[in-house]
Amino acid sequence: MGRQPCCDKLGVKKGPWTAEEDKKLVNFILTKGQCCWRAVPRLAGLRRCGKSCRLRWTNYLRPDLKRGLLSETEEQLVIELHACLGNRWSKIAARLPGRTDNEIKNHWNTHIKKKLIKMGIDPVTHQLLNKEAKPQQTSSHAHHHSAHIHITDDQGIGASSSEDNNSSTTPTEDSNLLDTICNDESLLNSLWMDDEPPLVDASWTSIPAGESNSNMSSLPSWDNCSWLLDCQDFGVNDFGFDYLNDIELNTMNTLGMGDKTVA
DNA sequence: AAATTTTTCAACCGCTGTCGT
DNA sequence: AACGACAGCGGTTGAAAAATT
Image (cartoon, rainbow, N blue to C red; front, side, top):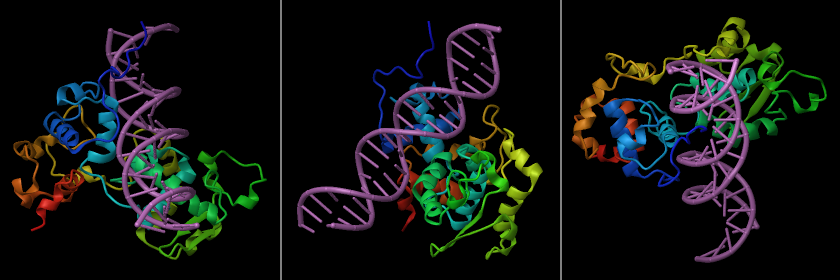
């Protein structure tokens, strides 16, 4: 007997999502909320596997996603968190509201890794490469010895030892946050827990609170988004834009509908 | 301008953890 | 305890875009 495949391979579409499929998925989730992902494609009328739907939603269609490259602050936060947590992208993403694990993973592999190598730092261990001969901890727990890395807008990159991290050139709240994360033992411990709250409120919480759906505790209530359902055409002009906040507009833009808002 | 190489990132695959029976 | 079902995670792939020759 054996486990059923997550989807019957026959007739299941793969590859890039079309705008039409996106609309169907968004429509469905806005209507029904997130239920069993396995059932979503059938109920939403999609020829996709549930896994694919979940991925598309969490990585691209979710209304609270930020777009564009990570900011300098976000990059530094990722580096610090990676030094603490290793390749636990979902844990890292949980600390960066509006960013997905996939996005951070991609950014790490395409940008940050190269920067670190360029400045002579091993992106796996966060140690200076010429010190690698020394026996060391595994990457995920190397934070006590990791270099503090500062990447600036002009690609000027510098590394400093843990001892001089107070000499950060940008003494912002964010840099304080970074220090806090890597110096606070209890906070670090909490990072290893499964259900830690985000350090910064996720954008979900900025949505006017409704009664939370029982099985969607991490999501906003869609009750307040029922206005979307009346707009089968999904044109932003069809809505009463005044109450479209950034998050909703973000989703509209994602679906290629936001440009209708420009007069 | 065309061909080739490199980079980016959305999406897939396979594995693991958790929960219910 | 064993098993199946499912969600989620992290590594990898490959098509498209951008850069270079």
